[in-house]
Image 1: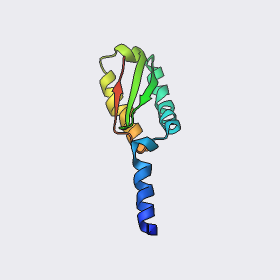
Image 2: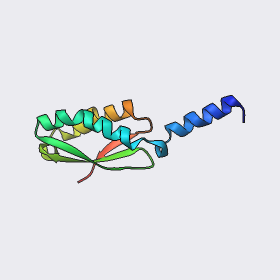
Image 3: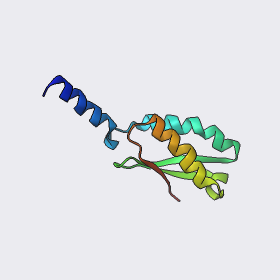
Image 4: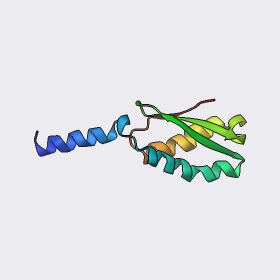
Length: 94
């Protein structure tokens, strides 16, 4: 394997869902948590699948808020996708 092939293989491996850094996922969630808590809510990381799907449980006011889908997709999901390679989506679990 040439050096450029090796670098390409390492780059692809780093971007695969199996290489998702769970600590980084928690860091991003901790960065958005104050905004959720300001409105009486919170979130709990339930799982990160091999496909890069983050499963969250919204708690408190966020669990029953009609805007929770927007918070989940436009807030939390966008932050996770931006800062954690391999994340494909965020889903709410109950």
